[in-house]
Image (cartoon, rainbow over the protein chains, first blue to last red):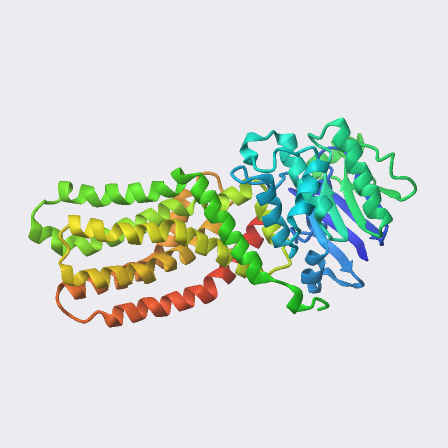
Length: 225
Length: 232
């Protein structure tokens, strides 16, 4: 479904990754690993179509992504560093507007049961400004569990989530993959519970170095490789 | 393209976005009251600074009300996309399958409903205070009715371009002011003609033409600006 061919990305005279090729098919989970600053978020933003600053090709359903944006966006759920939850609105209202942007209109019951699953029962009508950072992310995760998008692009979804939340999210991911969905995820956590379907891409294997000569010494010592 | 266009409910998403932004504005009233208070202050300082005489003020009233409205809109533009950028909502907006210009138009409409409409409502009060002749009131209201949405649309371009810039107030002003000048000229022109007892339909027609052009082109420009800025 999603195929990346010979992707190369430079930021500030540094090659974040080059000759990166990978393929994601239905029912697969791809975990992207890499040190801090290795370009995980950049890669996800490129894959989600938020950033066009790269060389190489991305294909969606065997066609160039740039000609398939409408279909691609209809099939994608993106979960970024910032949870996209409005502090002035209640969790229910937040899920409403997020879903309507994805062309979905979940029923009241569906939203309430999703909020209950992320331990936000009783907070449905409380403005999110009164909730904690972790609970903000839980609102976004409740939205994730509602979404019908087949492709999930998740950037560090486990951040600020407690132990029970992590376990719950792992089962949600496992269920999604089992039902034929696709997940691209960056996480420092090993996804042990999802057996057999996890593939890993180590971004450090594709890392380049600095483009300028004066950094040769550091490159030789392997600090940036 | 394999998407069935029929299944996309873009208008519903746009209405949802307008409703959301209106809710946000009502729950944090300070933000939308700021421009209105500013408007009131600007207009009430003029009689103190220039001259409280009826004749002088009534000549200047149209211009003062218009310039006040323009500055108040400029003041409010900063928050148009900033909030969405800060909490990550902007990414969700850009990744929506719906046409981005449509969603952006929804945001601009919500901005106009929370600032422009308030300014229009305030305008007759200020005009009374500044002794604007009664015959010029219809011209003032009509020109503001056409002009304020236009200022929201044109200012949206500047707001989109500076969404990632810290303290972007001056930059937005610099980017938007050239687009505001024709609006100001025709807006005050309409009021001045009415004060002088002449016809002002021509000015309003020009404003109307600008508004149609803005409605068609500004959302596209704003959408493109957002994509470029967020790309970086």
